[in-house]
Structure formats: structure tokens, C-alpha cells
Image (cartoon, rainbow, N blue to C red; front, side):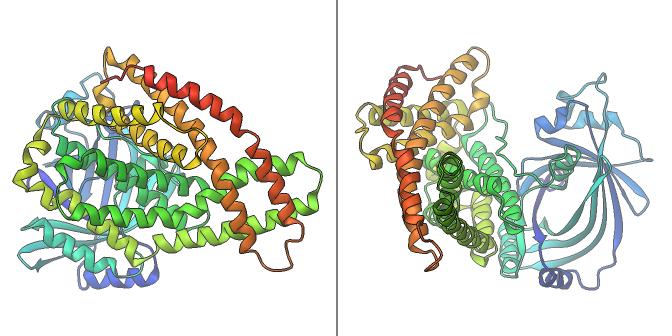
Length: 504
């Protein structure tokens, strides 16, 4: 690895006073220095769309110009050159990948500014030299600001495994949490007024020649970035969409582990799956309650005239929802969660699968070839299940729903390969897949609603829910009446899905 062109680092968000004390110890005695960075892009965000950022930085009176890849990686492209003064040197961009993205006619303009007080300490850790830097400051954009408080570990020389060993040690400290959202991405979100909004999945860019292993790493990083950003919102309160997006990130990552299974043939993949399954389950009750309350209870409460019984049932649901969110928040504050992030990130970047000669050919296979085979196998399996589905069996419907969702996520992973003439077929395929998934999802929500209602009543405080059982029966029965109509729609959607030509 050429460390002049690659940056190996991992950030830990500092989320409590005790974590700040721990971070201070890592840089004890270091002299602070002030860094001011200005980030540039075109008005239509060409650099951001392509996965790069361009910045000017002033450090102790000296200026530098840097191009970085913004893919959430631990191992990232970085091109940095000293410059005179605080103006962009466009000629230096010819040495970087962004030369193919922008041209002289593009108007590069400041997007946001970061101001940081940094303390850094270099030390030997096993066979590696690692720099520990504590950044305190703010991001400023569009008249708004957002605080920065993070401990960054950067590998100066040696083995990336030693960096993760240090991250694992620090993750044992309360609220020192691995973070995969860069300052640049936070700056863009602040500039767009999205700093406190839930984060959605942003697929990495791939082309037909991208090695399959590289594609997997990019997808996994994007999932980790989505997960950690939404987990931070969950810590601060019951954010319904944040919980949903965190679960989406987990599901996508679990699907990626399955889709890319042929190149991930090492023992650690099963450990990763187990930990991701644990976290998904910790958030499951909260999501089921959210869906039941908004899709079943509220419409029924508005339509019916027995407010006292509905209020009693609503009280039990609210109590159950609060317990479920407390469980989810406890999970994302736990040492187990922080360790999960470190270990999954380490495995994605530096696991045995990246070095195993048995998986090397698969990992180096061009993305187009790998995608065709992976999607073909999954599509064949899903189509067979859809054609033979016992539609009156809720468990069978649930299993098909899971397979359809995996099919859609797998298709999304390779969306960049669906250009040109394939674009129309890609859109048609996704539309039919989403339609079938939506119907199966509504059927599953009705089925799960019965269990949600029973659990909420069973765990309610005695004496405070008189009449709630009657209201629960009305709410559940009202939704159950929709099943027959949804099954008919699902059968039609299943036939359309089976007849739709795959885009790959």
C-alpha cells in the first residue's frame, strides 16, 4: 500500500463526558493546533455525486489542497499537496481522479467550513505507528453550525490490524463509538438542512470492471455509515424514521453478506451475521409497534365511537412502545454494539477473506459477471417460491416477503450496471418487485399485529386498561378484513413479477 496515496483511519465519536475524559488521556500532553478547512464543489455537487471531496486547509499558517474519496472507507484515497495562499490550484487536480469529473467551465465554490482544535499524539502500537487525534470544533454552513468532537486513529506505518486493536480497546469506553460519516458528508448535510434528519442508504459507485470484492466493501461501508448515523439519533430520543433506517441498514448488510457469500468464505462471516441478527432483533419490537400504531390503531381510533376503550388500548400500546424504544436505545449504547462496529469494519477491510487464495478469484471477478450470476440464482429461487406459494399460510407469505426484499436489495447493489438500454428494464423490474414486496409487507403487518396487540395487553399495568381487550379485538379485526383483498392483489403481483424480464 502506498501511504502517500492511501489514508487508513477510523473515527470514534465522543458521546459523553466520561468518553471525553478517556479521549483526553489518549492525547495527554499534546500541543493543540487550529485547523480551518474550506470544502469546494460545483453548484450541482459533481464531486459529491462521484464520491470525492476537495478542500483547502490552513494549518499553522500553511495551506494545503486535498482530494479525498468519500466512500466511508477505513482505507481511503487521499491526494494532498502544499500550496501558496488560500486559493485553489486547479492544475493540481490533473493529478487526481476528479480531473475527469470537472472541467474548466465548472464553477467550484465553497460549500462549508470546518474549524477544529486538534491535539495529536503519535505512538508505537505493536508493530505499527498510529496517530491519535482529538478534534474539537464545529462545521459551519448556510448560517448554521454543528459541533465536532471525535477521536481519530490514523495508521502512519505498519499493519491496519493494530489500528483495529486500539479501536477495540477504546470501544470498551462508554460512548466512544465508531463513526463512518466524514466531516465532509456532515458538512453537506448541514448545508442542505439535513443534519438532524435520518440518513438513507447511498449506494457506492461501481462499474462493470469493479472487482466484486471492492463492490462488497463499498456496500458494507455504506451500510455501516447509515447504521451509525441513525443510531446516534436513536440515542437522543424515539425517532421513528431513524429506527426504520437503522433496521434497513442492518437488513441490507445482512443481504450483502449472503449475495457476496462466494467471496466471504471465512469463519468470521458467521460471527458477523450473528451479531447483526442480534441488533436487528433488539430493534424489532419497536418497529412492529410503530407500524401497528400508525397503520392499524390510529385509523381505527379515528373511525370508531368508543373513545374510552380505545384510549385504554392506546395507553397500553404507548407503554409497550416506550419499553421497546428503551430496549433499542440500550442496544446502541452498549459495549456489544460498539464492538460489533469495530469488528465488522475490521473484517470488511482486513478480514481473512481479503487474503484467502480460495476466494481470491471470486473477489477479483469483474462486477458485471459476478452480479449476473448472483442475481440469476436469487431470481430463480424467488420465482419458484412465488409460483408455489400457499397464500393462506402467513408464515409462507412471510418467507416469500423476506426473499423478495433480498431480491430488491441485491438488485439495488448493482444499479450502476443498469445503464443505457438496461435502464428501462431495471425500472420495470424494481417496480414489480416493490409492488409484490409492499403487498406481502401489508399482509405480514396484519399477521404481526395480532401478536403485537396481545403482547401489549399482556404486559400492561393491572387496572389501567379496562376495555382495552375489546378495543384490541376491534382494531385487529378491522385489519384482518383486508386480508382476502390483499391476497388477490398479491397473486396478481406475483404473476407479474414472474413474467417480468430481469434487467441483468
